[in-house]
Length: 207
Image (cartoon, rainbow, N blue to C red; front, side):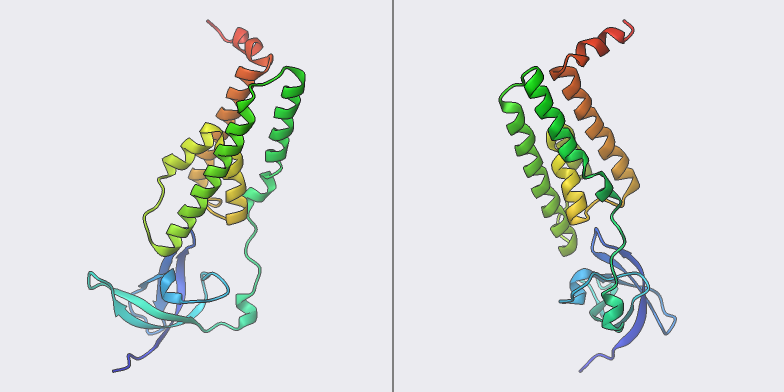
């Protein structure tokens, strides 16, 4: 027997986790909806979008929206996504690379240092990509502490690029605060260890 289709509006949506809630037009309780219930579509769901869906149940017997389709005109769905606040800080990656190069020319650096930053940045970017993909599929997620640890361990340039290009973890204030603390700590550690400013700063510290 074919289930009747219902109409509603997307009232909540967490793009990073890939789920949200639909408020039915008939005034019933809001329904959970996962990104996988939308099928193939050219744009991500957005709050306020009008939807058509079938009411089903998950493995625990809880009601949820399934077979979800948009009722919005294609032009509305093609509207530009909100700006990514992290994108304005991407210039820090080439700026830091220039700083490292300058230090290499002036004072010399361990040969492995460039490789460490490149390798850790690539690994961090891959981890961000995997975490975003897992969020969209509702699979196991990478702990935020792991992402911050990678940033601290020389992977912050890759993390910054991933946040900008993948739009992952870029709109969570608490995550961003901790990310910038870890990034600043890494840069400070570089300055203390590999530039003449390090000993000068240490002498200024009270004993």
